[in-house]
Length: 407
Image (cartoon, rainbow, N blue to C red; front, top):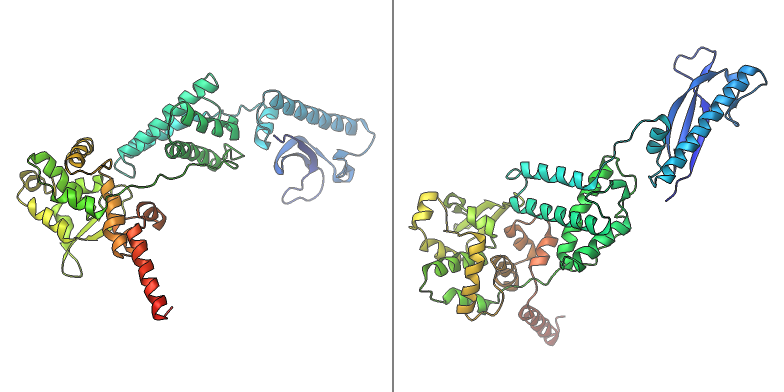
């Protein structure tokens, strides 16, 4: 860590200066950043040496002034040494505070994390969701565990955060907590948010993330093929709860809605689009972005099936949606009974819509992104994968062009 400083004494002309003495100031510079403060003395400009930063002359009053300035310089050097010995960062602010005796408020990582989570909790339903808070609380728990294991304490000053701390936390998450690289990257992202908050408030002068690069690679998104989707759609279930869960899941396979969005979907959010057919006009709960989706025949058929459902009629909902936990539990049964060997989760429906239902049927990715309610097309690219069948079809067209001599 660079910790050299430079001290300069100079005289400053005040506004409306009409002659006479000028006040002496001291300028502290650390790594290119400087702070000015009054030395508490003044001097006649004619008796001041800008080069030496001292008064000129042999009179007792000149010697006394220069001795005073020397004492200030010694005091500043001592303040600098105190910071070095305490392993504290040397900045213009910390050096000035140490010099003047002003106590600089220490800020601690976990205290800031708790304050952040408290604010997120207060904003649930107004910009944040409960699952978001759950993720931040988990990050707080993992950071506390890391601090206890590696540092033997429950909190740490933010100025002690560095590259070693971050890489050590990443290793702890993967090795000790057995967390995947993608999940570890999420928790480190939460830590980075706190660090960025500190930098924005000038509590940190250096960004400890400046040389950190995550090596986590996004997992390959799974989805249902059309054959697997048809197998689930056409399966007859004697148990009503399984048939109901299957219908909601298939509806999302043909609309791309997430669990949170289909659960809140109301009857008044179905309207007639510009093509004269039924559309969904809603907004995503996660991002509050608009999502407009033309309904495919398979989705319309499912909606018609639940027009007279008591729960839907009483609450104005489109479909009877169970809790996410129950939905995922029953989907495992549905997969087994439908002879689908993939691990079925509700979010798989969104990937199936993006990949199998739309992209593989030549729907442009920009259109898919709009229907999914994504704010960035890169997000859509994580969902939508080109199928081998689509590659084969596109290459077959290219072969025909070569044969016809039009390419």
